[in-house]
Length: 581
Image (cartoon, rainbow, N blue to C red):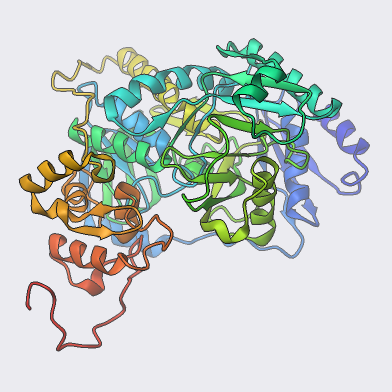
């Protein structure tokens, strides 16, 4: 394996000038060392090692000349946490409240084990899970034979039941891929071949003439088309919030705003997790920490993989701009990252066109800024599908950071060195579509280990998979709206004019199992602030409602995490609120 790596590196004219060291341990984990000139070179060399079939995983310790990536020192924070002491004891602690973590937590709540979730942010779905296109991929783009491909196809099918149980919005419009030249044709032929190898149902070639009758707005004259019947779309944050609320109703404890600083191993299936809010004792740890999963693994001295962050930007367009197709239409990207599916342009369940994401490697795992180059890439994809879009039609944009490893596959399993520590790592696209299957796999790992350790586990007799449907005032008929207002006049008070979101809806989510405490948390749950003005008119009212319902002062209300106060201080003490007037 070492010789193979050296030969491959020697053949690369851009990289062979660097002195790169490699060691491989008994578990076939490759560790790379050396210094290069750019971060992209770090990633490229990591992929050379990861592309060797016999290598199990890659730890990439190559550095970049002149680039310092700060390593945080949590010594003081750990001392403070120890003084606070044990705040919670559980059987299973999930680190990370994204789609993987919340899926695992809800699935594990079917059993008698105590389950808790800890996250550094003040709400669930604050990482990559909220900052993606919401595509429920069929499995046609995942490399055949990978764990990613297997769980993608299975998870896609499981989303139908999940949608029925949790009530989040999902559209299975299907999707078509189109090609205009021989190069495109080769790509689409490879995709169909991969889909068949992966067992993707309903993916095959489609007659171009029939497609043009169904979708007459397609540009030009494609020479080839493919059809994916199981392609779906969701509002991603809505799914995670529903999973979390369902988990909480079934007994899962959520400890938010509690960054993990360290982990003590006291024995087999015996841990103390040190967090910002204090210590948590647990038998099992599920490492679903996204881009920081390798950092969490390092806390138990079992870092056998490296996560390299891949930034992606997505613009959202005004609802008044119509999507010209009845289903998803995708062209073959000519500029995509070799390790990325290339992004696409489609319509969200709410009716907004979105495009992207881009795919840019970054040394900074929490770099969610939007850069012009990333936005330009996403806009080019949009123009290739909907040619009448304009930059002025963009109402917002956001950036997420994918958690990729150098094998470009999921890492799911019990640690070989630390009994009770389960990795759910390197979950990048199509991780969202795969999440129900990921959770089921983790459930099996933990239950099998409990059985081997004679830990009794029974079914949770009170488990309820269903969530109570929420009121979507804007989607009701006038008669239904009138009835709702008669039951509660707060539904007649429109807070967000762009999206027609009422005070009654905001009050409903404030009193849900996972309590939203910030303006953005309300935005994700109700869409208040997601319209054309992006909260320009309704944000003040949302701050007022949050302060009133949570018993806080206006200046204590955050935009998102702690410290992002919307208002810095009182400047008009004589001013009165509506209640005082």
